[in-house]
Image 1 (cartoon, rainbow, N blue to C red):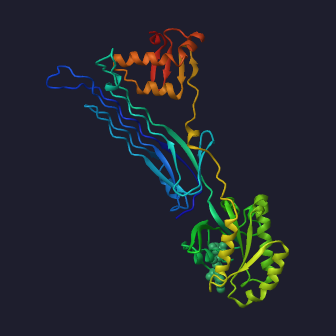
Image 2: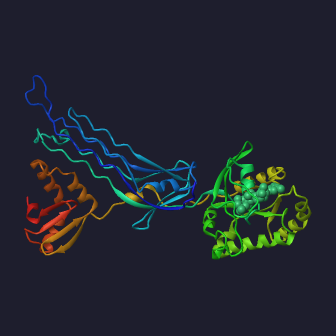
Length: 426
Ligand SMILES: Nc1nc2c(ncn2[C@@H]2O[C@H](COP(=O)(O)OP(=O)(O)OP(=O)(O)O)[C@@H](O)[C@H]2O)c(=O)[nH]1
Ligand SMILES: [Mg+2]
């Protein structure tokens, strides 16, 4: 499957169902009370993090993800069915931004974490809810609340406990395959791995952890050579690095150079990369030349201030020791820091309305609440219109219009409706 780590898509929650106007018909009651039920709630669009995906690739097949609309209310006080939520599964580590404002909405950093990105509209109230001691037979019902539409930018920054770095052919994918459930492609040519992949390392004697295999890095990667450093962003959020160095098929001096080059490339990308804890892993110890090179390499690495472990993914020698070292290091570390926000942030209070002059005799009033009120009002019904006029007073835009010296015949558009200024007089 193709690796995609950035994507723009649209989401839209379902519209609430309309409320119902109906009256009870009972055998011995000539004209029963109002009994129109409320409309059902529209479906939300929910993002859910899942370890089953490592790429945003599949999400790119569709541009719009939509929650289902709520159903209409029914007679006999029956509430309409709620629309189904749309659950959109994304890889763990997906950052969600509002494309228009560039605001970070959430960071889906834990497996199964959920975030409601677009809330379904409320169902309109049926006429039963408008009855009171004065108004015994209301013929009013609300329309359902519209859903909300949003353009999102998703950015995947893989979250893993351990990241594997090293030159092409160092044996990164082979290590991942021998300790985890992942089955990456392995071959004896450079750049076998073209995109990051993840595996879960599970053993009885320690808690499971997640390991990310990255494409090989070569000299000049920061300037785009080889596969460049684009993928290095995926180790920004790993807690521990394993730096693999092939001691079996290259000369000792080459192995040293390989090690230094990678540190250099990481520094070029972001100096903070070098602050991450790192264990050096000498690979291919089943080969005689690796065993020959090991003592000198180990001393050299020690002098640089790192710990080195020798392994053979082929014979499994050294793997238990390496895993023990990794778990020990991880257990002393904090979990990966999660950026971003809480659920509330997306639904923060917005200013109640905005007034805009569109040209001679033309105005526009905008605002989430006021547009909703308009969208939910049934303008085919006198009683609803009366109620609307009352409610709309509280926004204070009528005063604002007269302050702006709007004429009585001027037109005001709100959402999809157009009114004459004079119409708002009670
Ligand atoms: N003898 C021996 N060969 C190994 C060992 N580990 C890996 N290899 C071989 O080294 C070659 C490269 O291994 P990979 O795991 O594909 O290396 P990589 O670091 O993932 O390489 P890229 O994906 O190209 O960056 C393959 O032919 C492996 O079979 C080992 O422990 N012993
Ligand atoms: Mg590989």
